[in-house]
Length: 334
Length: 258
Image 1 (cartoon, each protein chain N blue to C red):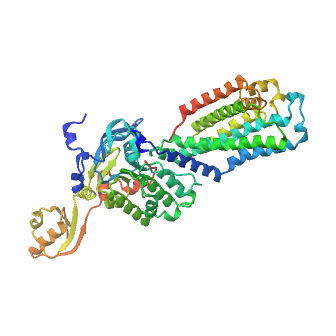
Image 2 (cartoon, rainbow over the protein chains, first blue to last red; image 1 turned 135 degrees about the horizontal axis):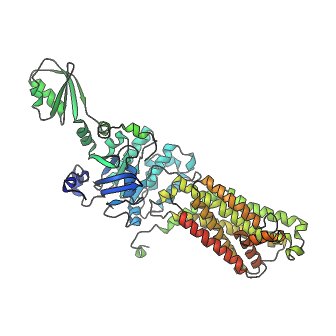
């Protein structure tokens, strides 16, 4: 049983930024205290979060962290050992038929018979749904418009991956689950896929995005849950996570003259000051660079050779899990 | 349609039709099974029909000619080839490719793809069997089957028994290659005991006794009996029903959808 203390600090209770959170009544996805074990291995341990309708929610973590298991439980492919899951208010275990109608799932692995044509596969999956999306539009958005008559086996790995994304979205789902959607795509195709996801979200689809591409999470996600060893280690906006993990931004500069450091420590934006040779390194939050430079200017000291660094989600990941994400790209998929 | 919409949403009926269509396309584009099942059986039928000595009635064959005896054997053979070539291999490879898993994330139940395959194969078998019967009657002057109802029953039970065995193979095999191996291991003995290589009536008594309890020979006996106007022996029908039930149960018990 959770203690009142853990309930209060539960990451799932934090809400999406902006007005979207306020507008929505029921969360599109609500997972609380999810636990799933495979024999002695605890794949997911007390994972809780809720996703607002229309949000793009990222699940980030190394392989084997439990990302895939979490989303597979969410869409009813696996039954959790304990915990509750609601998608648009529906329990996936109790009403699979309803869940499959409102979700679109793209799994990491999966292929099709080589001698089916792309259009034939898309048309078949489209026929599974009562209110499907426009096949031509989706295929076009993912650069498969001229591949409709090609055999599946003639597609490149990236094209197969894009077909897989098309099929996840062909049912015009209320909740789309995309597991490593852009793995194996070239940068141009990746950007096209991102634009499509944003477009789909703008039409009201909630997106659960499992990824280990930092750039993808930073670009697309409203909020990100960092998962490691089956637990959520942090849940925030990408910028919020980065700030939290690194203590924010840094401004590094060379002062034109000695100055009283209390000038800077007094500033609300500043959290720490360090010396690096003759350079000063100021760490802080908010509009740090402006605040520092203005304060120095007022004191008659010029800040030269200014370099501003904002920490990234990558820094947050390393800081919180002790691992680099590109290490996570190697090895078997989770 | 909307007036009759069930409370729980179910996949549209058109979904099953489109699955059958794609399975038919795959069968058409990979015709090895059609050629092996229909082509070889028809070719053998025509060759045997052209060999004069095969057309002579023989006392050791109960007054029938070798050709007469081979017609039901070739019918059973074509059913076996199609059931074994088209059922276990593709089903296991669908599991390997993750197709069954992906289907189970859609409103369509994964077993629909199996049902779609069975529809396509049953159609292939029906066409093949109709060709064998027609060629026998039109080109070789064999009289038409005298008990068509019993023949349809025998063919249906034969399909059920062989499909069940094929599904059990799909359930037990982990890979498509293993399915092919198991399929060959099951098919060749079945063909031997059905008399494909040498008429069972001319084989030693012990072989004949074993043959009576193999599904393919039971089917051959039942089809042959129906052709000449008898109702198939209860034992033949029970053997087929038994194989269908036992292997159907094994398949259901051990089949993994992912």
